[in-house]
Length: 207
Image (cartoon, rainbow, N blue to C red):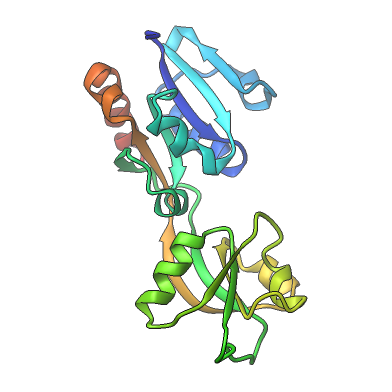
């Protein structure tokens, strides 16, 4: 096992905000780190290795131990239900999960359909509402589904609401607020507890 503490991080907005947080916590990450196109970046002087991945894959890497720790959105953790410890709310990349659709339209009474890339979250939410729906899993352009008649509603991440508005959709219900969380592999937490606890302590002081 490597002495480097391996961190899985999603590319994009979370990566930018997480790197800023790590720097505030005193980790010296090189300037070229921000613009690198590499998928694995070692920072040996800090004892760190970074794996850059799709947001949905972070918790998977941590669960299977190829990463010791990770930074993942709460939306991913709710959807994936991976065997990881959630140690800290980093309070970055705020957004929320919501139900949306075309304005002034009712759900189909016979076979209501909901398109989403969060099938588990959506199914659980509508079950709690006492509604039986057909979930249609999509991987991108979720807003398109109600426009072309594929679904009555969508469940998706909302940040500013601009994308919904630009596509003529309205928000119907808010499901859950989402921020990024610091997660840990249970085995790594036993073996590298000192490194991990130190990182949690340093991050918690700047959150």
